[in-house]
Length: 301
Image 1 (cartoon, helix red, strand yellow):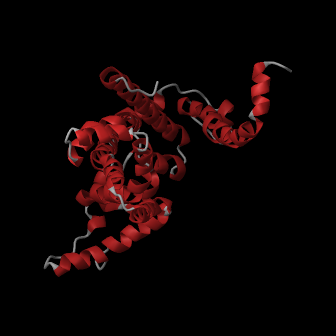
Image 2 (cartoon, helix red, strand yellow):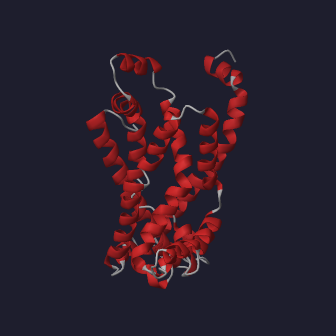
């Protein structure tokens, strides 16, 4: 009973109790369901169950790779994520840097609170707001008409879908995403700024020489995580916003899985597609991590 490990557990027992709930959550809802992955290699039948369904090997994977819709899904998924990486990834960094420059604490807190709020709005509500704002008689088209132009059917034109989707993502996530960068900025040594001021550096030079290099490891880690999600797009908002006329640019792997798996009840095929997506994401994450480690000495592992 005097073993150091046991004494450490007793001393921190309340922390372990707090840790128990998230541990059980991940165990039950993230790790245990992984057992169901094997249906990707079976001709799954609900009546026969997972163990009773016959093995088909890589048949579903081959079917997906030969599907004429395959390249369209890959293209749409990658483009939405690449455009999101180009526009949405820097947005929280820029906001955090701007907030860090504010000296009026009350105004800074107001801006932070207002920018955080959209994160807590339900996806369904956000989609409803987008539909209302972008409808033919919505606020955006009223502004367009004030400038003498014809109303634009934003949600009916495939070329507008990615812009609408990514813009709404930025609005909803920029404030919440800036929190981690603001936390990183608090760790920057104030004496570095004092020394830079003595050397005659202005605010812009301090930003380039001190601020950005100091938070570069945090930016690298977040970039690696984002690169690992290049093949993954949440289906909820896309399903709420897309329609037959925007399938050309809006349909992604996750929405395809939703239709085939839940609506079409083709569970084995949908699982195979989802597993393919996860494996490609794992390869991208590993490659991004290794590249970052080689270039900047910053990595997840």
